[in-house]
Length: 303
Ligand code: PMP
Image (cartoon, rainbow, N blue to C red; front, top):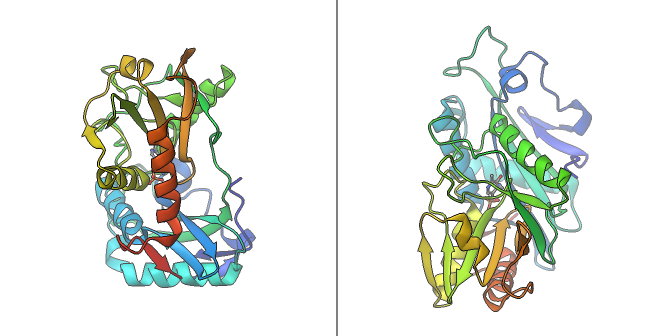
């Protein structure tokens, strides 16, 4: 559960979690006008590490740019971001893996719905690393809700308000007895889950919707694509039909809070042999190793 650990970075300092609060009339609260990212913090014998921090920071900056939140990039740098992450982690001293959620909130209270020039408050908190989907073979349902298109609310921007779309679809899946949903775009092509990207394997080829398929450009998606290419697996990023998932040999999902997790059933149809496949297992292992011990790609920051 995303209950913050005791010490939270909020505004300009580390405060007690109960003091990290936003006003009821801020644009963040009224319109969901906050952008965020979540990254894992690992704890090992070597110390505490964060995964692909610069990519998470870059995506936060890009989310701000898309939405028009222009005060963040002028007030923050990657170096400051790393320093603050270090402070939060040191203040809480987690003894096992946690997730860190960094958010840029538009904290001004103004009449109407505009964004440019409004002030922002940054919060960073840690919470228990509990996966949001089963790790041993999940069951998915095509959602009755379509993914919001790029020209309505862009999925590329990780903006809080857009997550109402994910809430609707995830709740629909749960109400129907499934673990999570598959979002289709307005033309019926596959996008992603409520908070994870999706991959399928067919005939040894790894296929995933491309970044113009109304998806979040997931950091773990990028990681899987890199690791797969290193494994010599043929990769295709392209438009994916729902029925391709029905006849796939393997399907898996990935994300910070989803891990790399196999899918065993979609819309009442077994995926492959209803067992976790070899490609999924290989990429799961490579991903796990990369989270902590990566020395080749420069993905790991020691905190
Ligand atoms: N899609 C959506 C909609 C998400 O919320 C997430 C989780 N951040 C992902 C995909 C996976 O992204 P990442 O690998 O960066 O965690």
